[in-house]
Amino acid sequence: MRAAVINLRCGGDIAANLETAEHYIRAAHKDGAKLIATPENTLLMQPGSKKLFAAIQPEAQTLGVSFFSALARELGIDLLIGSMAIKLSERKAANRSFLFGPDGKIKARYDKIHMFDVTINEAETWKESANYQAGNTPVIAKAGGFNIGMSICYDLRFANLYKHYARAGAHIMSIPSAFTAVTGKAHWRTLLRARAVETSSYVLAPTQGGVHDGGRATWGRSMIIDPWGEVIAVLDHAEPGFICADLSMAKLLDIRARIPAWNHETQMPDPV
Image (cartoon, rainbow, N blue to C red; front, side):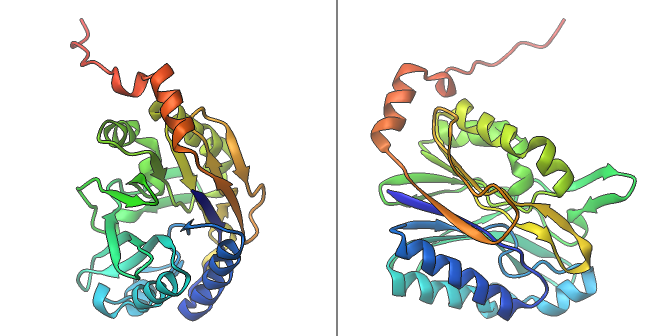
């Protein structure tokens, strides 16, 4: 199966974000991709609680849902939208990933489990839980004969989620992200390769890149990594664009048969 991941640089203008995403989705489809993945916050990157909640809607009224449903159906593709902010109440949203099938129907939804509540340095602190409600359910979806373990950005740092997915039959880990420029430079490639090696799985990692509305800086460098941990496609910059790679079930199964470490984990006793 040919897959694509997309770099975006979304801001607070939903219409402009959808237009840009559509452009690169169509370009990736033209290049033969049957599974196309966009980054976290594809709908908007909106700083500040007031602006965020003024812009978002419940799922049934979210423009991006109907927009991407129609686009997936028109192109006949599996379209994984990394995440869109979905209004749950006046004070909480879900950071929700969607997989739309070739018929335009929603195959799967995944709400980000691990909230990005961190202090990166003296100038950069994030508390995602102030505006978003954490999910609590891992989700495996299907596309083109592959099973996809769904996750979002900060989930990447929690290896047990991906080991759970591998043991449950996932072949691909989707990790749409908006990694900060600081953590991206330090950890992005290393963590993505580790998740691929630990689970003998493909990793699809589309991401935001560049400086966004409000001055937030993200790392970019969308990647596709194979089950051996090799980066088989990379958009090695922060500019909008896309990359494609061919995923092989035969290669994945061969690697898993030779080094099935993902299925060998044992429960450790308490330290003495």
